Length: 384
Ligand code: PLP
Image 1: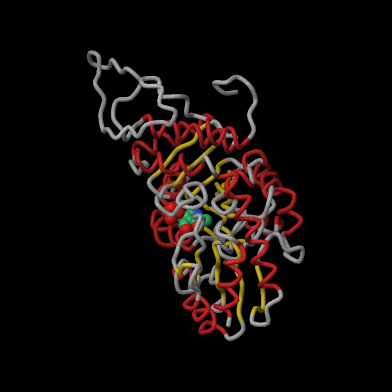
Image 2: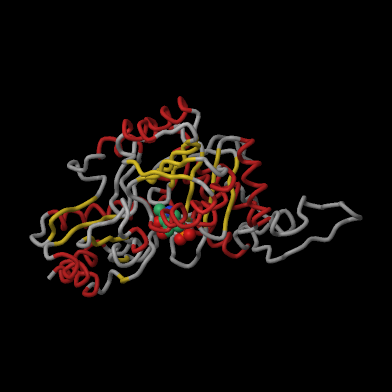
C-alpha cells in the first residue's frame, strides 16, 4: 500500500511512490538533497536515519522506493550507471567457479563486463539463445548461479518468455535476472512473471531525456535486497542526488512517453517493412516476429526500439545513419528525441568476433516522441 492508503495504478505510482510532500517544507517535489553528511544529535543520534550520502541520501531513497513500487519489488537500489548496477549484482551473486548463462543478444557493455572483467575473477559464462527455454535448460551447469536475460534484447529485439525461464530457474535453484531497460516497468514487469532481479539502465526510458546516466536494481527478495544494499554501500557506485532527481522527474511521465514511443515505432515499422531498400525489420510488435506472441503476452505495448537491415551491407547502413537529420546519430536510447546508430561500429563494437556479433548491415533506431510524420519524412530521405 502507499501513504494515501488505497491501491494505485502504475501512472499514479510513477508520480507519487516514495515522494510524499517534503516533511520540512511541504515542497511537492522531493528536493535535491545535495549533501554528503548529516548532523548527529550526540554520537549515533541520527535524525532521519542518514549519516553519510554514500550509505543513504533522501533524494536517492525517494527514487529507490519509487523504483521498487514500479517494478513490484521490495527493494530498489539506484546506481551511478546501468553497468555499475550490473557490477554490484554480479559481485553480490557470484564467487570464483560460479557460472552464468548469458543471452546471445545483449548490450555490448554487458557482454564486455562478463567477458573482460568478471571472467578475470574466475566466473564462467556461456551463451544461450534465451528465446529458446530448452537451450537455456541445456546450458545449465552444476555451478550455474544465474540466468541473465534482456527482453526485448539490444539490438536485435529478441524476446524471451520470462515466465518460462522463471520456471526453469526456480527448478534449478538459480536466479533469473532480467534487464528491463528496453521495455521499462510500464510495458513489462519481470518480477510479477517470476524473475528474481530486475536491472535497468535508467539512462534510457526511465530518465527519458538524454540528460542523465544511471542504473538500478530491484528485487522482491528481502534478504537479497539487504545483500545488494550492503554491496552498493561497500563498493560505492551510488547515484548522486541530482541524478536521482532527474530520473524521478523522468519517471513521472514514463507511461505517456512509452505509449507515444510505441505508437511512433509502429508507424516507423510500417514504413520500413514496405521499403524496397530494407531487407529485414526487427520489432516485437510485428506479427511475423518469432517472439510476437510471447511479447504480446508479457508486454503492454512493444516499445520504441526498432532495428532493421538494409540492402548493400555495412556501407549502405552507415550511409543511412549519416544521412538522417531529425534522427540524431548517436549512442544511447530511450530519450524523447529520436536517435539512429550503427550497432556494429558503435554500441556493439565490443561484441565483434563473439557469439553476440551483430550483422554489419544493421541500423538501430530509438524512436522518439516527435510527430510521427516528421520521423517518416526523415527516414524516407535517409533511406534514399
Ligand atoms: N542494459 C542495456 C539494455 C543497455 O542498453 C545499456 C546501455 O546502453 C546498459 C544496460 C548499460 O547502462 P549504462 O550505459 O547506464 O551503464
